[in-house]
Length: 114
Image (tube, rainbow, N blue to C red):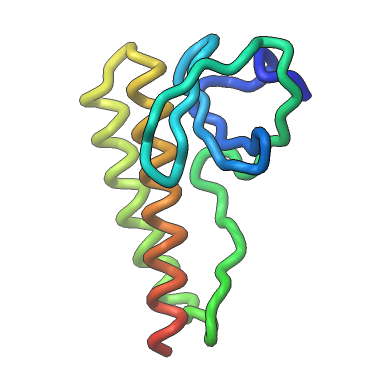
C-alpha cells in the first residue's frame, strides 16, 4: 500500500518503525511523536486501524472484564478527542494514535501483573 492511500489517523509501519498518519505528507512516530515527511509514493504497511485491539504480549493475559473496562475508558477519551479536535484531521489522527499506543502499553502492564 502507498502512503497516500492511508486515511489520516491510521497506524502503519514504514522503514521498520511505527507511525500514525497526521496529514497528506506527514506522520508522527508512535514512540515519541516526532513528525516527519513521508513521500506520497512510499510503500507502507497498515498495522491497526483506529482502536482495534492489538495483540497483548506479556507474561499473562488480561481478564475480559479488565480489557472491557480499558476499552470503555478509551472510547470515552476518543469521544473527547473528537469533540476537542473538531474538524482538524491531523490532531484527531495524532491523538488517536497516541491513545492506541497508551492502551496497548497499559494492557501489557496489566497482563504482566496478573
